[in-house]
Image (cartoon, rainbow, N blue to C red; front, side):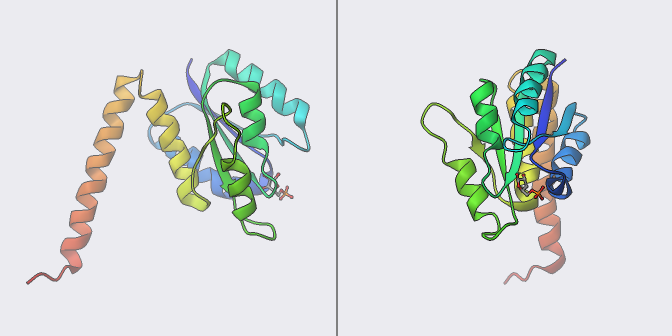
Length: 164
Ligand code: RP5
């Protein structure tokens, strides 16, 4: 069974990452979600990635803040695609996590998304787009979602637009 795996470094990441899980649920995409830290529970993190991969995880989403090494730790353990979500907070309010997550050495990619809710939601979308390469039903749903978004722009504008 193919699914997406969401790993968060701390319970404190859940408030934002709930948006990631909710987005996958909205498309009826199966996912696992756990807390495991690159620093506080390195063995648990490593073991979980191996187990999840065996069970069918196709994409991993890693959310971490501060000295954010979780996405990199996942990349070290699997060749499945990794989406990194930097978390806000700490003295630099996420800039530290963003640079940590995005600056992977050549050959060890982590697809890093934005800080905050947009990043959490986009991590889900990116994971679904990867699944949709081989899942036509999901590809159709993602195209339909784009049409809904396009129509919303037009509808929102119609309510307030001023044209000459
Ligand atoms: C990171 O440190 C976590 O991912 C979290 O974003 C940050 C702070 O963790 P807590 O001290 O709130 O548990 O490892």
